[in-house]
Amino acid sequence: MNTIAVDRLMDETRRLATLYRQTTGQTLPISAELARFDAAKHLHLQTLAIPAKGIDFVGTLGPIQDKNIQVKSRVIFNEKNTRYRLGQLNMDLPWDVIILVLYTEMYQPYAMHGATKEVLLENHTARGLISLSKFKAISHLLWTEDSGIEWDEIWTNQPKSAYP
Image (cartoon, rainbow, N blue to C red; front, side, top):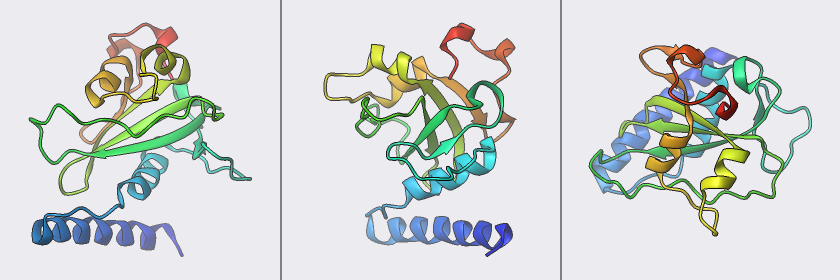
């Protein structure tokens, strides 16, 4: 199957998931797979030759080059809801960077943020939980729908040492 066919399948998946939610009020559990697809596509991530637990990709460019990456996702259905959280973070797995892909209610990616394990170790709860607002505050914006890749350090408000 070629890349164009996979792009079309993912677009149809987004459309069906949106229609399903509008019709039933329930969500389909597809955001994790969409996030892996979108992160790989937009951030030029490389799949592993041999799959490893807790690692989805290896970075190939910029501050995430040669880093082991785990991808997380969150669909934002209500901008006013401040209770969104990431899934539980397992700090014992061999990932270096968590990339969070944020989606609109129509399952379209609009931003990707990245944070290193070191930064997350300092900021997660004892149960490995972190709120979406906290993650965004301690992470770096890596990609936006409007601008594409965003990791030029000139535009960041955090020191370079905190980069993923």
